[in-house]
Image (tube, rainbow, N blue to C red; front, side, top):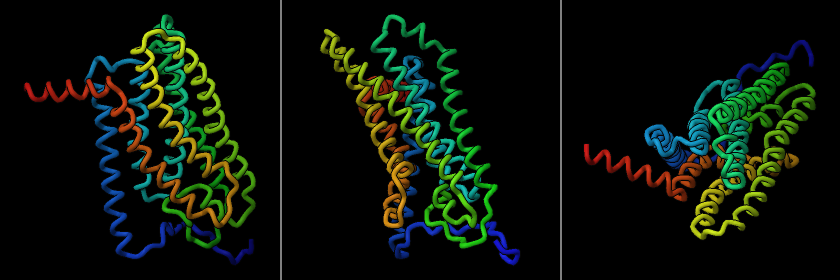
Length: 295
Protein backbone atom coordinates (compact mmCIF):
# COMPACT_ATOMS: atom_id res chain seq x y z
CA UNK A 1 0.00 0.00 0.00
CA UNK A 2 1.48 3.29 -1.10
CA UNK A 3 2.06 6.23 1.24
CA UNK A 4 -0.31 8.44 -0.76
CA UNK A 5 -3.29 6.16 -0.06
CA UNK A 6 -5.60 7.30 2.72
CA UNK A 7 -7.23 4.99 5.22
CA UNK A 8 -11.00 4.45 5.09
CA UNK A 9 -12.67 5.08 8.45
CA UNK A 10 -16.30 5.10 7.36
CA UNK A 11 -18.31 2.63 5.32
CA UNK A 12 -21.49 2.83 3.26
CA UNK A 13 -23.97 -0.05 3.53
CA UNK A 14 -25.28 -0.85 0.05
CA UNK A 15 -28.21 -2.96 1.26
CA UNK A 16 -30.72 -4.08 -1.36
CA UNK A 17 -30.70 -1.95 -4.50
CA UNK A 18 -34.45 -1.46 -4.98
CA UNK A 19 -36.83 1.27 -6.07
CA UNK A 20 -37.88 3.94 -3.58
CA UNK A 21 -41.44 2.58 -3.42
CA UNK A 22 -40.19 -0.94 -2.67
CA UNK A 23 -37.79 0.36 -0.02
CA UNK A 24 -40.62 2.18 1.75
CA UNK A 25 -42.79 -0.93 1.62
CA UNK A 26 -40.01 -3.13 3.00
CA UNK A 27 -39.25 -0.56 5.69
CA UNK A 28 -42.79 -0.84 7.05
CA UNK A 29 -42.85 -4.64 6.71
CA UNK A 30 -39.55 -5.07 8.55
CA UNK A 31 -40.56 -2.50 11.18
CA UNK A 32 -43.73 -4.47 11.92
CA UNK A 33 -41.82 -7.75 12.02
CA UNK A 34 -39.34 -6.21 14.43
CA UNK A 35 -42.13 -4.96 16.70
CA UNK A 36 -43.87 -8.36 16.61
CA UNK A 37 -40.53 -9.99 17.47
CA UNK A 38 -40.11 -7.72 20.49
CA UNK A 39 -43.69 -8.35 21.64
CA UNK A 40 -43.52 -12.13 21.16
CA UNK A 41 -40.17 -12.57 22.90
CA UNK A 42 -41.20 -10.12 25.59
CA UNK A 43 -44.36 -12.14 26.17
CA UNK A 44 -42.35 -15.38 26.55
CA UNK A 45 -39.94 -13.66 28.93
CA UNK A 46 -42.75 -12.16 30.98
CA UNK A 47 -44.66 -15.44 31.29
CA UNK A 48 -41.54 -17.27 32.45
CA UNK A 49 -40.84 -14.60 35.07
CA UNK A 50 -44.45 -14.39 36.34
CA UNK A 51 -45.63 -18.00 36.26
CA UNK A 52 -44.07 -20.24 38.97
CA UNK A 53 -44.89 -23.36 36.92
CA UNK A 54 -42.45 -22.24 34.24
CA UNK A 55 -39.51 -21.83 36.62
CA UNK A 56 -37.75 -24.97 35.43
CA UNK A 57 -34.39 -25.44 33.67
CA UNK A 58 -36.05 -25.75 30.26
CA UNK A 59 -37.79 -22.38 30.56
CA UNK A 60 -34.75 -20.83 32.24
CA UNK A 61 -32.81 -21.50 29.03
CA UNK A 62 -35.79 -20.44 26.92
CA UNK A 63 -35.78 -17.08 28.73
CA UNK A 64 -32.12 -16.64 27.75
CA UNK A 65 -33.05 -17.48 24.15
CA UNK A 66 -35.79 -14.82 24.28
CA UNK A 67 -33.33 -12.20 25.60
CA UNK A 68 -30.83 -13.09 22.88
CA UNK A 69 -33.53 -12.87 20.20
CA UNK A 70 -34.56 -9.41 21.40
CA UNK A 71 -30.99 -8.10 21.26
CA UNK A 72 -30.21 -10.09 18.11
CA UNK A 73 -33.01 -8.40 16.15
CA UNK A 74 -32.18 -5.01 17.71
CA UNK A 75 -28.46 -5.19 16.89
CA UNK A 76 -29.19 -4.48 13.22
CA UNK A 77 -30.52 -1.04 14.17
CA UNK A 78 -27.23 0.28 15.51
CA UNK A 79 -25.17 2.67 13.43
CA UNK A 80 -21.60 1.99 14.43
CA UNK A 81 -20.01 -0.74 12.32
CA UNK A 82 -17.74 -2.09 15.06
CA UNK A 83 -20.47 -2.29 17.68
CA UNK A 84 -22.91 -3.80 15.23
CA UNK A 85 -20.52 -6.53 14.15
CA UNK A 86 -19.48 -7.39 17.70
CA UNK A 87 -23.08 -7.56 18.93
CA UNK A 88 -24.26 -9.54 15.91
CA UNK A 89 -21.51 -12.15 16.27
CA UNK A 90 -22.04 -12.34 20.03
CA UNK A 91 -25.74 -13.05 19.78
CA UNK A 92 -25.36 -15.41 16.80
CA UNK A 93 -22.85 -17.59 18.66
CA UNK A 94 -24.80 -17.38 21.94
CA UNK A 95 -27.94 -18.67 20.22
CA UNK A 96 -26.04 -21.74 18.99
CA UNK A 97 -24.70 -22.51 22.46
CA UNK A 98 -28.07 -21.97 24.17
CA UNK A 99 -29.72 -24.35 21.69
CA UNK A 100 -27.11 -27.00 22.53
CA UNK A 101 -27.78 -26.54 26.24
CA UNK A 102 -31.52 -26.83 25.64
CA UNK A 103 -31.02 -30.10 23.76
CA UNK A 104 -28.92 -31.40 26.65
CA UNK A 105 -31.68 -30.41 29.07
CA UNK A 106 -34.25 -32.38 27.04
CA UNK A 107 -31.85 -35.33 26.82
CA UNK A 108 -31.50 -35.48 30.60
CA UNK A 109 -35.25 -34.94 31.17
CA UNK A 110 -36.30 -37.77 28.82
CA UNK A 111 -33.42 -40.24 29.09
CA UNK A 112 -32.67 -39.79 32.82
CA UNK A 113 -35.93 -38.51 34.36
CA UNK A 114 -35.21 -39.83 37.86
CA UNK A 115 -31.90 -37.94 38.04
CA UNK A 116 -33.11 -34.80 36.23
CA UNK A 117 -33.38 -32.50 39.26
CA UNK A 118 -29.97 -33.65 40.50
CA UNK A 119 -28.14 -33.26 37.18
CA UNK A 120 -29.89 -30.06 36.05
CA UNK A 121 -29.74 -28.18 39.34
CA UNK A 122 -29.74 -24.38 39.31
CA UNK A 123 -25.99 -24.13 39.76
CA UNK A 124 -25.40 -26.24 36.64
CA UNK A 125 -28.01 -24.26 34.71
CA UNK A 126 -26.38 -20.96 35.66
CA UNK A 127 -22.93 -22.19 34.67
CA UNK A 128 -24.23 -23.44 31.29
CA UNK A 129 -25.98 -20.13 30.59
CA UNK A 130 -22.91 -18.05 31.52
CA UNK A 131 -20.69 -20.31 29.41
CA UNK A 132 -22.98 -19.83 26.40
CA UNK A 133 -22.81 -16.04 26.70
CA UNK A 134 -19.03 -16.15 27.30
CA UNK A 135 -18.48 -18.20 24.14
CA UNK A 136 -20.44 -15.65 22.13
CA UNK A 137 -18.54 -12.66 23.54
CA UNK A 138 -15.16 -14.37 23.11
CA UNK A 139 -15.78 -15.29 19.48
CA UNK A 140 -16.97 -11.78 18.64
CA UNK A 141 -14.05 -10.14 20.46
CA UNK A 142 -11.41 -12.20 18.64
CA UNK A 143 -13.02 -11.51 15.26
CA UNK A 144 -13.19 -7.79 16.05
CA UNK A 145 -9.53 -7.64 17.14
CA UNK A 146 -8.41 -9.43 13.97
CA UNK A 147 -10.53 -7.09 11.87
CA UNK A 148 -9.25 -3.87 13.45
CA UNK A 149 -5.65 -4.75 12.58
CA UNK A 150 -6.48 -4.63 8.84
CA UNK A 151 -6.00 -1.47 6.74
CA UNK A 152 -8.92 -0.23 4.62
CA UNK A 153 -8.07 2.13 1.76
CA UNK A 154 -11.21 1.88 -0.39
CA UNK A 155 -13.77 1.26 -1.69
CA UNK A 156 -16.20 2.23 1.06
CA UNK A 157 -19.32 0.33 -0.07
CA UNK A 158 -20.18 -2.76 2.02
CA UNK A 159 -22.34 -5.04 -0.10
CA UNK A 160 -24.73 -5.84 2.72
CA UNK A 161 -27.45 -4.25 4.85
CA UNK A 162 -25.28 -4.29 8.01
CA UNK A 163 -21.60 -4.71 8.89
CA UNK A 164 -21.46 -8.44 8.16
CA UNK A 165 -17.90 -9.63 8.72
CA UNK A 166 -17.33 -11.47 5.43
CA UNK A 167 -18.58 -8.48 3.43
CA UNK A 168 -16.32 -6.09 5.34
CA UNK A 169 -13.26 -8.33 4.87
CA UNK A 170 -13.64 -8.02 1.10
CA UNK A 171 -12.84 -4.29 1.38
CA UNK A 172 -9.51 -4.73 3.19
CA UNK A 173 -6.39 -3.82 1.20
CA UNK A 174 -4.29 -6.52 2.89
CA UNK A 175 -4.23 -10.29 3.09
CA UNK A 176 -7.25 -11.51 5.06
CA UNK A 177 -6.51 -15.24 5.11
CA UNK A 178 -6.08 -15.30 8.91
CA UNK A 179 -9.48 -13.63 9.37
CA UNK A 180 -11.15 -15.97 6.89
CA UNK A 181 -9.64 -19.06 8.53
CA UNK A 182 -10.82 -17.91 11.95
CA UNK A 183 -14.33 -17.13 10.65
CA UNK A 184 -14.50 -20.62 9.16
CA UNK A 185 -13.07 -22.21 12.32
CA UNK A 186 -15.52 -20.22 14.43
CA UNK A 187 -18.35 -21.40 12.19
CA UNK A 188 -17.28 -25.02 12.68
CA UNK A 189 -17.05 -24.47 16.44
CA UNK A 190 -20.47 -22.87 16.90
CA UNK A 191 -22.34 -24.60 14.06
CA UNK A 192 -20.94 -28.03 13.16
CA UNK A 193 -19.88 -28.97 16.70
CA UNK A 194 -23.16 -28.01 18.42
CA UNK A 195 -25.25 -29.46 15.60
CA UNK A 196 -23.42 -32.80 15.89
CA UNK A 197 -23.99 -32.87 19.65
CA UNK A 198 -27.67 -32.06 19.18
CA UNK A 199 -28.15 -34.78 16.57
CA UNK A 200 -26.59 -37.32 18.92
CA UNK A 201 -28.79 -36.09 21.78
CA UNK A 202 -31.97 -36.31 19.74
CA UNK A 203 -31.13 -39.76 18.41
CA UNK A 204 -30.85 -40.91 22.03
CA UNK A 205 -34.05 -39.02 22.87
CA UNK A 206 -35.92 -40.64 19.97
CA UNK A 207 -34.91 -44.10 21.14
CA UNK A 208 -36.02 -43.24 24.69
CA UNK A 209 -39.37 -41.85 23.48
CA UNK A 210 -40.13 -45.04 21.55
CA UNK A 211 -39.72 -46.98 24.80
CA UNK A 212 -42.29 -44.87 26.66
CA UNK A 213 -45.39 -47.00 27.29
CA UNK A 214 -47.81 -44.12 27.83
CA UNK A 215 -49.30 -42.63 24.65
CA UNK A 216 -49.74 -39.28 26.43
CA UNK A 217 -46.09 -39.34 27.54
CA UNK A 218 -44.86 -40.02 24.01
CA UNK A 219 -47.05 -37.21 22.64
CA UNK A 220 -45.77 -34.71 25.21
CA UNK A 221 -42.12 -35.67 24.59
CA UNK A 222 -42.50 -35.46 20.80
CA UNK A 223 -44.26 -32.08 21.06
CA UNK A 224 -41.49 -30.54 23.16
CA UNK A 225 -38.64 -31.94 21.07
CA UNK A 226 -40.23 -31.18 17.68
CA UNK A 227 -40.49 -27.49 18.64
CA UNK A 228 -36.79 -27.42 19.44
CA UNK A 229 -35.89 -29.28 16.21
CA UNK A 230 -37.83 -26.73 14.12
CA UNK A 231 -35.77 -23.89 15.59
CA UNK A 232 -32.51 -25.83 15.21
CA UNK A 233 -33.22 -26.74 11.58
CA UNK A 234 -34.08 -23.20 10.53
CA UNK A 235 -31.22 -21.49 12.34
CA UNK A 236 -28.35 -23.90 11.76
CA UNK A 237 -29.32 -24.71 8.17
CA UNK A 238 -29.25 -21.10 6.99
CA UNK A 239 -26.20 -20.13 9.05
CA UNK A 240 -24.15 -23.03 7.64
CA UNK A 241 -25.08 -22.03 4.08
CA UNK A 242 -23.88 -18.46 4.71
CA UNK A 243 -20.65 -19.13 6.64
CA UNK A 244 -19.44 -22.60 5.64
CA UNK A 245 -20.30 -22.85 1.92
CA UNK A 246 -17.57 -21.34 -0.34
CA UNK A 247 -18.37 -17.78 -1.35
CA UNK A 248 -18.73 -16.44 -4.88
CA UNK A 249 -20.09 -13.26 -6.44
CA UNK A 250 -23.24 -14.94 -7.76
CA UNK A 251 -24.33 -15.97 -4.24
CA UNK A 252 -24.02 -12.55 -2.60
CA UNK A 253 -27.68 -11.61 -3.08
CA UNK A 254 -28.87 -15.01 -1.83
CA UNK A 255 -26.59 -14.72 1.20
CA UNK A 256 -28.01 -11.30 2.06
CA UNK A 257 -31.55 -12.68 1.90
CA UNK A 258 -30.63 -15.66 4.09
CA UNK A 259 -28.87 -13.39 6.58
CA UNK A 260 -31.90 -11.11 6.70
CA UNK A 261 -34.14 -14.12 7.31
CA UNK A 262 -32.23 -15.61 10.23
CA UNK A 263 -31.44 -12.23 11.78
CA UNK A 264 -35.01 -10.90 11.62
CA UNK A 265 -37.44 -13.77 11.07
CA UNK A 266 -35.84 -16.34 13.40
CA UNK A 267 -36.21 -14.13 16.51
CA UNK A 268 -39.90 -13.87 15.60
CA UNK A 269 -40.37 -17.56 14.79
CA UNK A 270 -38.73 -18.84 17.98
CA UNK A 271 -41.40 -17.60 20.42
CA UNK A 272 -44.20 -18.51 18.00
CA UNK A 273 -42.93 -22.09 17.63
CA UNK A 274 -42.40 -22.53 21.35
CA UNK A 275 -45.69 -20.91 22.36
CA UNK A 276 -48.01 -22.40 19.75
CA UNK A 277 -46.64 -25.94 20.19
CA UNK A 278 -46.15 -25.86 23.94
CA UNK A 279 -49.12 -26.59 26.21
CA UNK A 280 -47.38 -25.21 29.31
CA UNK A 281 -46.69 -21.84 27.68
CA UNK A 282 -50.27 -21.64 26.37
CA UNK A 283 -51.53 -22.56 29.83
CA UNK A 284 -49.40 -19.85 31.42
CA UNK A 285 -50.73 -17.29 28.94
CA UNK A 286 -54.31 -18.36 29.67
CA UNK A 287 -53.74 -18.06 33.44
CA UNK A 288 -52.18 -14.62 33.00
CA UNK A 289 -55.17 -13.41 30.95
CA UNK A 290 -57.62 -14.86 33.47
CA UNK A 291 -55.76 -13.17 36.32
CA UNK A 292 -55.88 -9.84 34.50
CA UNK A 293 -59.64 -10.14 33.96
CA UNK A 294 -60.30 -10.80 37.64
CA UNK A 295 -58.29 -7.77 38.75
